[in-house]
Image 1 (cartoon, each protein chain N blue to C red):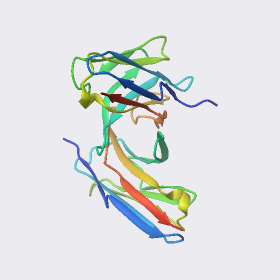
Image 2 (image 1 turned 135 degrees about the vertical axis):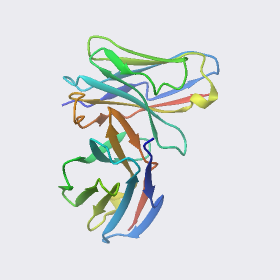
Image 3 (image 1 turned 60 degrees about the vertical axis):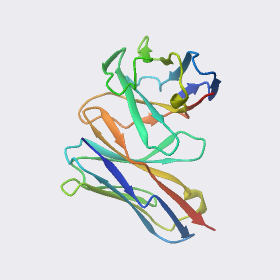
Amino acid sequence: GAGVSQSPSNKVTEKGKDVELRCDPISGHTALYWYRQSLGQGLEFLIYFQGNSAPDKSGLPSDRFSAERTGGSVSTLTIQRTQQEDSAVYLCASSLAVGLPPGEQYFGPGTRLTVT
Amino acid sequence: KQEVTQIPAALSVPEGENLVLNCSFTDSAIYNLQWFRQDPGKGLTSLLLIQSSQREQTSGRLNASLDKSSGRSTLYIAASQPGDSATYLCAVNRDDKIIFGKGTRLHILP
């Protein structure tokens, strides 16, 4: 079956512009996660959704970052007034459920964001 | 605060050799530990998931072990192949946050 998909695969934007990144999880997966990977850094957790709600937003770097999920499926990560330090690969993952223990996460190919 | 460390940062070995990648974490109160591989320009591929109650998991030429009390995991790759060249990441999961190490860049020499 289809895996996690993300769009766009690459995005170049000017500093100060807003961007929207999209994630389509695996059908039936109730949990959805956003991460980012900056050059030379490990993966950084941003936010996760259980259904349409986001119990934990503590990983979002600043109030310029927001995310939403509708219909328990597609999620969008929005970055407002982008800064050069926002340049990174943004990865989305989904899993069957958030629980104890958490399920295995399946990752999308990522969106490479470059802020010029 | 949970910290995940992977050693070595990079490794090159001749094809056919067995090798071990190491992962350590500072807080042993984890739900599970997961090993991923990441190929250049690609997303992450999950290799093995070890629940906190388990000691090891095997998949093909891969074997991952977990020692929670000492905060360590190893990924053993048998009979390495050039196609195994990638970055290998370990991640620990707790309270629905997943903390990743910075990875080991593995290069298998043909």
